[in-house]
Amino acid sequence: MIEEKKSLNFLEQIIEEDLANGLSKEKLRFRFPPEPNGYLHIGHAASICLNFGLGLKYNAPVNLRFDDTNPAKEEQEYVDSIKHDVSWLGFKWDQERYSSDYFQQLYDWTLELIKEGKAYVDNQTSEEMAIQKGTPTETGTNSPNRDRTVDENLDLFLKMKNGEFEEGSHVLRAKIDMKHVNMHMRDPIMYRILKKHHHRTGSDWCIYPMYDWTHGESDYIEQISHSICTLEFKSHRDLYDWYVEQVYDSTNLRPKQREFARRNLSYTVMSKRKLLQLVEEGVVNGWDDPRMPTISGLRRRGYTPQSIRNFSDTAGISKRDNITDVALLEHCIKDDLNKTAPRVMAVLNPVKVVITNYPEDKEEWLTAENNQEDENAGFRKVPFSREIYIEKEDFREEANKKFFRLKLGKEVRLKNAYIIKAESCVKDEKGAITEIYCTYDEDSRSGSGTEASKRKVKGTLHWVSIKHAEKAEVRVYDRLFTDEAPDGHKEKDFKEFINPDSLTVMNAFVEPSLKSAQNLDRFQFQRLGYFCVDKDATKNRLVFNRTVPLRDSWAKIEK
Ligand code: ATP
Ligand code: MG
Image: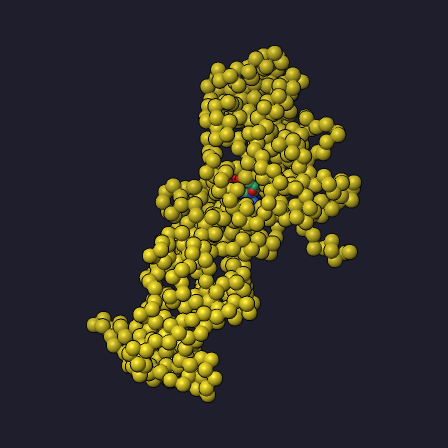
């Protein structure tokens, strides 16, 4: 029993306490509330996995609520992408809701508040209001408009609603306390005028409710038991509670806001505003560019839903701001693909090898295991012939003892094939090696059972048969930023840290079994890393993205 308690995170502990204090389990209800003003990123995945994870754990419904109160920035395209991403991650929402569904209800409640003397129209400039707001150490002062009569306020608010005033000229404010220690309680704005087309309500409204007024009431309408948000809203909690209190009826549940730390990831930025900048300025090729920390970018890069869920679970949730090492994310995808990705051979940086004692017209289809980590993965046939490609960096004329690859006079095994020995090589005028001449040991074919096939040689290389190989474009990605926390510098803009070498395009050769690979199919290119088919691939042109290399500088966290 005690052990079980220990493994609960702090939000689960809060829920357990509420249940122990009489909250019925049937009343548990959660929501994920994205604003449709951009694509979801790996930070949102933390919130999605958390909320939907609680839903699964407690068998409670989770709503997907679009927090669409700012028509200037919101679009249907974003709504569609968000739904796609949440589903792709493997979660099912109970109801699809929109804050804009509640505009009328919010308006009706507002009229009640005005009648109770709890809200007033202010037509001062925003600068004047900012000065009156005070500071954390100095109390605020009342607006000269604070004591308008109810009738005046109703009249002015109606005019705001009817579009009789200019944008920015009038706001409706809650009448709370200009001396409150919490600045958010100093007569916060409830409505502003925005004469913008809304992606759902069109031109029905030209006043739009502010986040705080909308969020708590939406939670109340949907009867969300635990409204989980990120830490920057902690100081809004008083206001959240005040707003809910205004409409609360004791036969209903009173939603509770609780906060956890945002997920930050090293070597990237996460704010939608900044990601939008990267897209609009062409630093990347769209929201789903495989270098982006968006869910759609990670998907295109080859990440699996499972790996992202594992990452969220492993990184956990915290009460304090911190940066999660991107190496953990990379570890999670490698771990998943190691179990599931078929192994194939591809040469990214080819040099030609001629096996001089192998007959010119001969070809063999050798048996290769698809995935030694998965006994059901089976086998495939890989063609072998006299001329093959290997990686340039797998050959040296001379090298020290630690170089377990091909060097003159020494042997290596070709994966699934024969042992070869380098005899000589040809160079161009710049000294670059253009061809390597080898001989092979005819009896050494892998799996043939001969003595020679069991012969141990240090080093096994991947290869492809030249006449059978398919050409492929391979996009190799590095981090998009050179700095661990690109937006953590006061003096410098985050874009100063963009890595100019974050994309390298290679003209590779891959084994022919890949010809039929489909968009998003994932593979391990043996000895190189994990790769997936990009959406730019066509019937006649293979394109792969490197998801993650097999080895990297982060090996330490893999133990
Ligand atoms: P951004 O600053 O990236 O635009 P946001 O908070 O404005 O993010 P929303 O669409 O409002 O984005 O967020 C939807 C939900 O996801 C909210 O509950 C928010 O707290 C949560 N969320 C957003 N970013 C993160 C993050 N980095 N880590 C954890 N949760 C996040
Ligand atoms: Mg937001």
